[in-house]
Length: 422
Ligand code: AMP
Image (cartoon, rainbow, N blue to C red; front, side):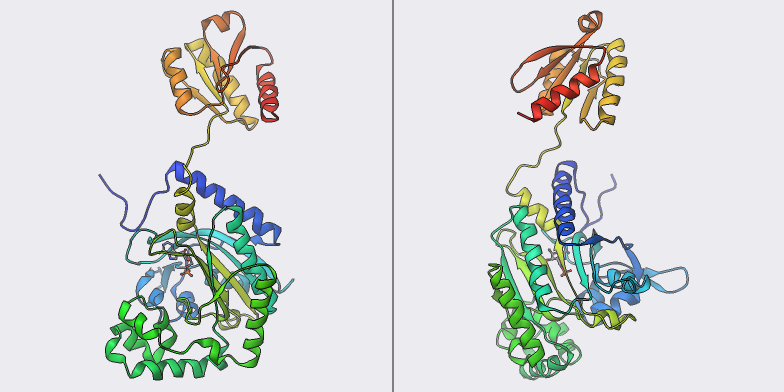
């Protein structure tokens, strides 16, 4: 049998109900914060990610699914969404009518990482991006929106890690300080880190190799190098969060794996998922729109890892398939014909219906209705047909009523409505 590709996974129906729930809450919640949806494609020019995420990052060096396009250019399955949203913002001049755009997008990302629990090669994110607002209150506002989203999903406790990565000016002396501190101890670093020491020293800070982590722990933090403007921005983000009652910890070595971040960077972690503890992360990327050919435009965003979020929710509650509101227990050709018409009419009116066309006894049909946790069973047998009725049974209370065949759809709708109001 042909099996699933390693690192990829199926989201089975029971799990998918949790995914639908998460995505629905995200749409409603982000909508009430003024966000609109954008849906960029999953395939982009490879150059887009090389130029935005950075040449000397793990993602670009090792993890992208890249292949030649028909014109000899390289194409990449997107490893993250921000670059695509920025490309769309520039390409369609979304800034022309109003530079301020609040956008969200939901979908799969692809990275050739080593697969393990909580880390997949196709994973899914819910991304939110804000363009055109430089104010540090936006940073606090966005983090608050993210945490209140988790709150709506009853996902807590969570740890909020916060840092400032400064601007290109203050980051320069910081990079030099990191290079100076770690060059002396290069023999203790992994080969990737040695290679990146001069080219991209910030990437040493998120190396996962234990020996490198130990060395990095003794390096200075970016917050000690911030220029006045970046320092003031960071202070306002912190006081804004405190005003909203958000508890956070400053993590001076939080850099995140992408090169485009400026100033605020944050990560949301949980203790309940083992090694893969990050369920969301984000930050400011004030230079990226211009870097990719657009106008000079401040921006900030985040990405929630839906796979990990769904795992967290599923670890606390049993998944459940949607239960049918009406299960048709119809016996025989004449009953199927009538039931099929009624079932179609009810489904078309938004009622969740299940109809069984197998030749089974009433007892067997009732067992199946029980297994599906149906709210009602509509029994249609020879006796009912001869009396021109059907029997509607409320499963929880065993209450039964005879419903006339004429006007049955309407009568069933009335019964369901009165039940839902109790
Ligand atoms: P990043 O785009 O790396 O900033 O990641 C943002 C969020 O996406 C993380 O906090 C994770 O929850 C999730 N994520 C990133 N990579 C993976 C992966 N390979 N598998 C599952 N989730 C991931």
